Image (cartoon, rainbow, N blue to C red; front, top):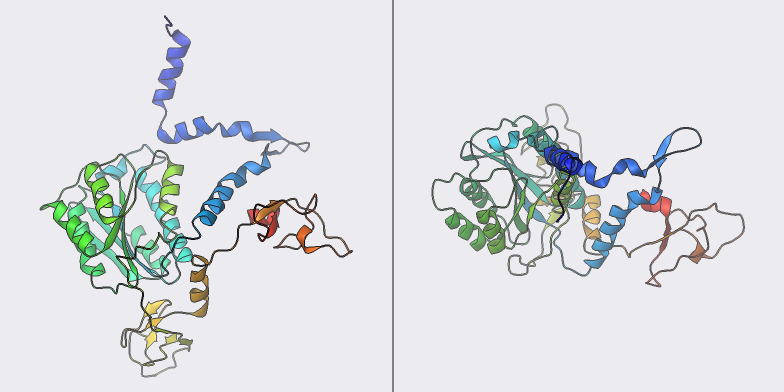
Length: 376
């Protein structure tokens, strides 16, 4: 029978005493990927290791290219600011890690969904508070969250659902209605039956997803299953980043919860407000083409005639989810000579010669791209 010696027991005690962020680096052993070059500088021993995650994301996007996705999303993000966010299982604390990742998520969301709108809700002390209304400005949500990071008390799932339900239920059905919970607590303090609020969200065709920082709660799992959302529990800080960023691209479109319809959109012109000028609306540099009222930002909705106002770049960028680019084939990198070279041996992006000639591809129509362009 094997009996652990003192060294094995000491190693187990040392591993058990490590925090979550320390275990992440201990498991990856990132220091083994470094080597010293001839000039004495440290560099990655395997330069291709940094592209593995990007290749995986590109392959996943190409595999889901046939899935129908919506162009317009109405998303409310509910951030748990209960006393549980003061735990130090992440460096330096949960609230510091979550807030930094939320700033990153806001910018990535509008980069992936230029025609969509996002709102921010926080729950603490057993109540839910709406910090920002649905809008298309990520900096407004970031500024609102930075000013309201005081955490105390308990979170309330029921109050949060009822608050977002009152706003999402009035929106048109051509856009998907979504709620994303970022949960740190292991309990919820509700004034009534939380399952009633879940049933109301399901009837309003609201898709609820949950990203848990601590552990799985049965009520969160059941809420996501009944509304068609996703549920995930983060194990490390890096895993939490992956779970949040997975909600930035639009999810598969549910035909039962959305209706295909024509949406009237206007393309306003940018005109500076003259001194002593008379205008309707809240003011701004963009003029509505229908009623000539002014708005401050795009995309948005006219406050007078309720026309959806966008710009042509927003509309063009939203099409990359509907018609994704064919998957690239990675090849070598080399210099472009003076002699004419067949297009099959050139990088599709930078037009430089591929090392070793044309790259082999599973799809004959897929363009080839060098490693340097794949990284950028």
